[in-house]
Amino acid sequence: MHARISSDNPYGYDRWGFAWEYVPWGGAAHLDFGCHKGAFLSALKPKGIRRLVGVDVSEEAVHEGRRLFPDLEIIKIHEAGDLPFDDRTFDSVSMLDVLEHVYDQVEVLAELNRVLKDEGRLVITVPGQHLFSFLDMGNYKFRFPRLHRWYYCLRHSQEDYEYRYVSNPDGLIGDISAKKRWHEHFGREKLKRVLREAGFGVIDFDGTGFFARVIGSGSYLVGWIKPARNVLAWLGQLDSRLFESTNLFCVAEKGRF
Image 1 (cartoon, helix red, strand yellow):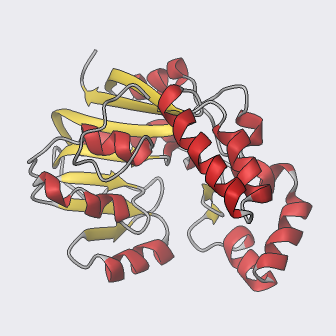
Image 2 (cartoon, rainbow, N blue to C red):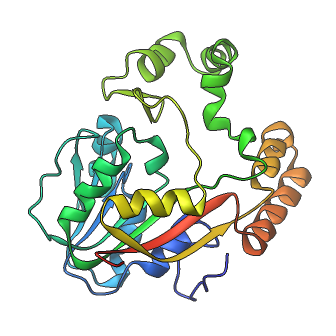
């Protein structure tokens, strides 16, 4: 990751650290699309943004977010539905590891374009397409559905599995659109093309990691051993700082061509 992390950044060399650096200070309003429970949105408070708004398709996440952060605006939406905001409401928008879960990607990005002010900034992060993309655990439920179901029921319950992966009321399979059924990965040209179709121009690309999925798989297998966990955590931090492939980060601007 080549972006410089400032001393007041509460995060490290990851997507939240990158986004925190590029969300402008002192704006009138910021929208976090796919905010989950609102943790990143809450971290933006020191930036002096007067209105912080988050939207998410998960009823469960929105409910918990409102409990945890009652001073934030956290709103339940439908994935492809219109956002409940006027044109040019927000100075900036963040969309952190969300686009790869979305079926109608250009439609959603165009809606974000609508609610952004002219020359407003979009900060977006996605999984990068690279050598170790096949190790993405987010796709195991699609590659090995029976094994995934067995393991999830073993760790949780049959009822939890049915709710989360079979009859999810929010139209999801886990955290991915039921229409999409795949945790997508992006190269720079692919992401640039989708953004351009929605009316955005790229200012800068960045990213983190190369061996992150290998390290993550190792943590999953031996993470219960403290010395091994500590070594893998150190390797993960080093990998994030030195490389830019596992995760793709982008700053774009409305109407910039």
